[in-house]
View: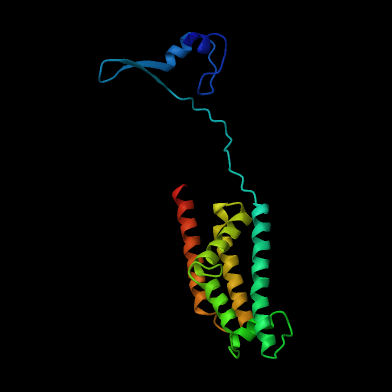
Length: 202
């Protein structure tokens, strides 16, 4: 197909969205230049017209991942509570309110059998489910799934996490254990990295 077949008298749109009614107008928009190796090239002047629309990426909550993570967290939390409740019942103590399990643990007035201690150490180890890395990653992954990965929501996610951490501290009744503090720092670092990545693509 010839160039005139695309930009000639037919009124077809050229690559820049303008319309030409004669091939002479196309010729007026182009000029021949010489390159370093003496080959001819054509330089096209882009149209000043723009479409006026900007394509914006839509962020959609990943509900399947959110539900999966919630179910997993509930199962793991239930498992942890069961361990503690078994330990408490063996010591002839009972729990009243659901939150009293955390204040009981915070008080430290209990003994732990070897099996419960071994399971707890495994769970909070560096590679354990409740360890710093896995827990901080789950928190950030959950927040990202809720917002669909929208980079404009990073600071809202961070604020929500800070609020949750403050509430957990209140439920615990005093400063949270060292592992919780290290998890907090790891989550904040991950939010910082997300913010850096978002700023680098702008």
